Image (cartoon, rainbow, N blue to C red):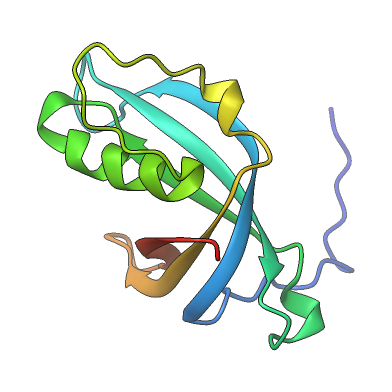
Amino acid sequence: MLELNFGDVEPQELLPEGLYAVTVDDVAIEDSKATAGNKNLILSLRVIGPDSIDEGLIGKKIREVVSLAASARWKLQIVLENLTGTEWRADDMKLDPRDLLGLTARVVIFHNPGQKGGVFANVKSWHPNI
């Protein structure tokens, strides 16, 4: 039995909407919860900038789920091109997800209302980190 006390836990604030520089801290491949048989690339992103943002936002985490289904490959292509700076246009290309660790890009964050009443900070668009 675990004894748990949450009296000193501060509520987590949503990352404000805006443009952020991020780095990939962790990657995983997971089964899709939405579609049986599909897989998702899960990216754990950490805010590293820009310099003009509140210092308290540096280090905040964002979880980005990218479907690996053929019908959603366009989004994976955008993510990979902006993280790697390489065109992902050919057939038979290979990716070791671990190669994404430490790569950086810029993302636009927006607040997305969830189906069960919550609000989530999600990535709206990806951009190269210049």
